[in-house]
Length: 407
Image (cartoon, rainbow, N blue to C red):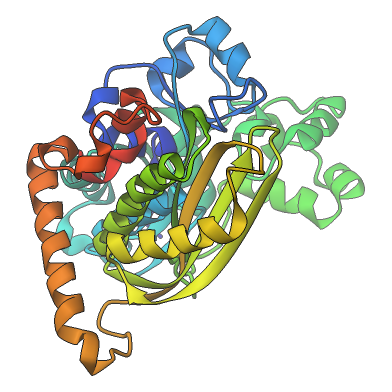
């Protein structure tokens, strides 16, 4: 078998940087709410990693190591979108593709010789992914899945590593056992207690002793270390789909009036509508979530007429706002979010004939706005009620809301 393992480098953070060029070359982390010190780091780019920023640590800890760290919130719908784009590139070379999360895939290119050697295909994939998406991948090339996965981890970012039958003992056996797929911390410690430190030690260990401690998995681990893994690439029977598209923000100051909240809702609704159009989707449900300044929250949703138009989404969210909140006798709002769900592909919605012409005009107008903003940026054309907005900072706009428009 000729197997590739393709791993998108620093996937979440790389997507954020690809979408927002202003973040490139800076220290970037994807995190929980950066407004709160108890948020944690979910992912980081290479620059932040080199400063010691670690996944899972608190934002305040990360910023002690890297004061210039820019924290942006996660956009999982974007990550799914980019994952699909990259897998489409992979599919040009083989239909035998097995996903391992959003950012990793095994490819069986045994029958793809028309494109070149496995290593040449790996280099072509790296180049095409970078050119078409702005992301980089590291690719492991080997004769089985375990060593291909290990190869993609050996050299990052943007590299091809070949582990073949002639060199695997030199490249793989000196590595610690935890470098091999499915060997975690506890298994590593058990192996260490048996005097097994490296993958080479595992390959040459007493098979009966391994089976006594780990059962059948002991023998499987040893077979992998010996390069005898024969697991095939199994194309996934399902595909990841975008189930909802949402945007939320904590405002610079508390929202104390309907006008405050309505301006933010209008802004967020435009972001949601833009992404729906990007994915070729329309929504049938709009959800509004409010968080008061005492950090309690409430939410409500309603059905809408199948749409990807910002004005319609905003109108639905505003109707929910008036049902959920009265600024005269309730606490001010600290944050809110607008989410579109119950999605359907454009063209698959049942249209009521009386509204066809009006809806098509609105959609054409907003698609035209998308094209202008894609070319010149979001601020090239904007709605009057966004001007002078003291609720959403320029930093927020640059790092989150403008993501759909920055290339």
